[in-house]
Image (tube, rainbow, N blue to C red; front, side, top):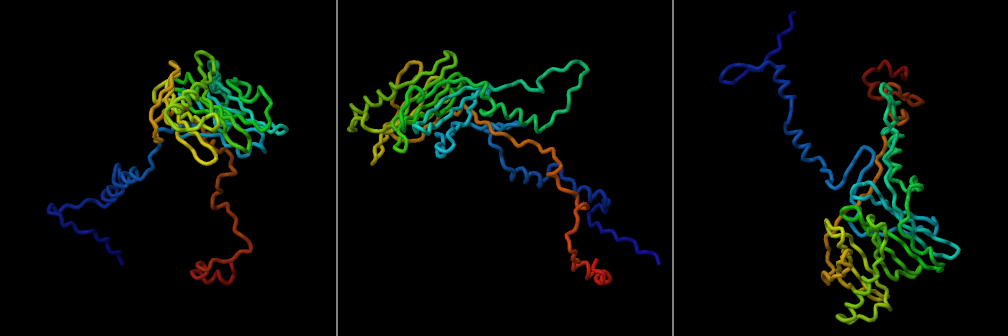
Length: 349
């Protein structure tokens, strides 16, 4: 008995021609730029344009909001490091250390500057005809990430400023924290917060490191100008009797000399906003911008470096092929298989 031929679908087109089944099937599967890929592109998450990612590190803007060093566990750990902040060119970074002296219960701080190392085993030149040894991706990744780790670059750091080292004051605390780099990366804006341990903040001072001059300058005249303004234009009591804070927000976008800051005066009951101020570093002039506590755009020049996970080279993390997976004991037959093959249900295999 001859098998019946496979019936072909009828063509009802006016030409009466019929495409071969193979070509029709291929045309259905091919989708060089079809609707499926368009839908995937639309649904794919868009990357943040402010985040720069390389093979080993990921760089994100630092001054996206006012940051403070978390000192919650300082009395236990005795040492806390701030987040390293890189210059716009990513060739230097700065960070601060806050230390707690337990016998006198005093908190001191220091600011450091570190040049990012660029020499590695991959940068070394090889002789003509000499082949370099194959590099280990994990070790190479660790080598690059160590360049941005303050704990691995202590011998290359340079001290910029210190607070609390010149006097012994029990229960006194002074901390240094970074605000941001200027647009050119030549100036670093940071602040010094002073107060009494377990009591609260007393005053905040603004400091600027100038790389071209090699100096660090503190600006106490900002507090005097704000105090003078409110003594003549407001009904506030003497600010010397209150706790007050000048919070530097950062640099004006694209500027190397204009710093924006907000000021508050507060006691145990209330907190008074003292205005948004602008300080010209070159002219040494303080200007009142507005008296409303509203958001103000500031520059985000510095970068934070976050390590990217190194590729795993060990075989322990790889999944074993399914044919090498041993069955669990005691063995129990699959009920679906025993129903299909009753002969095996008697042996239990």
